[in-house]
Length: 119
Image (tube, rainbow, N blue to C red; front, side, top):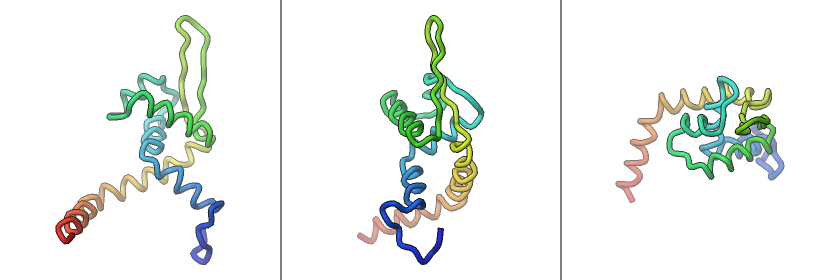
């Protein structure tokens, strides 16, 4: 990314920001970091996500090549989700962003409180 270029509609940096702007995308990717997981277990790992939103999130991540869905025959049939190699490349940036949030989260919340009081 260069600083002299505008964020055009087809800019790759905008694509990356769009992928991580949805909270559930990063959360689901992080929850899949240790290997394949079934839908129900993934829902249990992610607090506060509905079945519908998890399904939408997994479809969006699969559409973008970050997650693969594996369906297995059997009785009952089972489905697992896992990160693709491309999806794994986002773990370090997600981890770095989480570390930043841990370090600066209190400052952000204080700024929000100040802003709210001043309005």
